[in-house]
Amino acid sequence: MDTIQIQGGRRLQGTVRVQGSKNGVLPLMAAALIIPGKTVLKGCPRITDVSAMADAMTDMGCRISRQGDDLIIDATGVHTSRVPRQCGEKLRSSVLFLGALLARTGLAILPYPGGCTIGARPVDFHLEGMRRLGVFVYPDGEWIRAVGRPGGGSCRLPMASVGATENLLLAASCCAEPVTIQGAAREPEIVGLCEFLSAMGADVRGAGTDTISITGVEAPGPVTFRVPGDRIIAGTYLLAAAATGGRILLQGIPSGMLADQIDIYRQLGLRLWENRQGILAVREGSLRPVQCATAPYPGFPTDLQSQLMAVAACAPGESRITETVFEHRFQVAEELCRMGADIHIEGQTARITGVPRLAGCSVEAKELRGGAALIIAGLAAEGITRITGVNYIRRGYGDIAGDLRRLGADIRDVRE
Image (cartoon, rainbow, N blue to C red; front, side, top):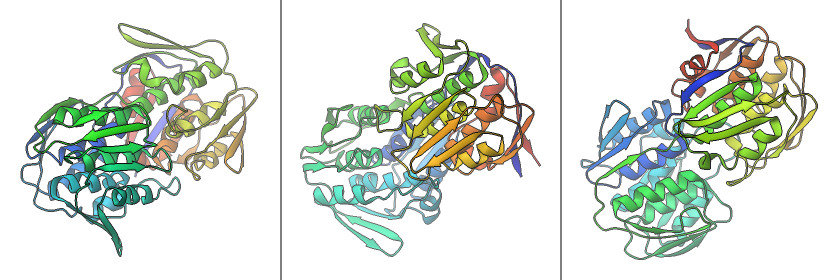
């Protein structure tokens, strides 16, 4: 069994480079499926979600290789519109093959997607959006079948769904008629996908707003594109610095990508400065309690809620965190309480009373971001923390133990 072992109590100090974005690279990989040629994704993270996506694309006829941190995808030989079942079971982002395959072949057959068990994440918005653009979509047992290409027009999403926005953009990327998406998600990962589709030859306008219009390209050209830094990993390391009273320099991500997080760091007592070298973060004085509600961008990201809870468990006073996106994202609270945290869940709000010190023990990661939260708790705790369920953490963090060691943490991967 693989575990992560942490001897807590060390302040984080030093410099670390943020890897390429998990949430950014997966839609870019799906977009590469549209191009009958080569795509180069520079700075592609080495995470298991990328490997699972690459395996599925290989099964569909792509040739994929790595040169250092660059992922090279040649989709010339795509020969099927069916996504392998095992990909759907393991990977939530497999749903993005829906839009990509419709753009490439006019047909998509894919299993209902899996992923972390953090709450209901239905694909209804994806499917209804496709129908509104003229695609025939219907369920077939455990499969989704879609036939046809978008014929232009307008679609309004009932909520700002990141995945549905990405899927509709992918489907419309080869459409000759303009497509308008209203109520679109505004996350930086959406902006990155729009920039990729523009480099492919599509005309995309309104990226970063709630109304995006796209006119597709008939013959998409090859693209070389740099994957942006991972703002969730950056936030994880900043929260770890807050929990340990650290002083760290983050490289590979601009402060503008963290605009949705800055207020929370100020509440905790963490100060940030940006210079030529990167983003310097220093905790000033003692941790302070926090009041926070997650929300779609530009609100505080749900993907950092668990990590924030781990920090709040160490902050004197009472913190309140309200989860508005996923109903089961408080799973990590039980494990944090095993370490001595004082957390009470009231509906979709967690009431956290800070304790002087968490105590290291054996805990289990049950999903990706909860696993990162347990690492933060272990860094701040007294004694040794052993974390199982490491496979969840590796879905999004390429080498979190190595990164934290570079910041002075006593942390290591243990394979038994």
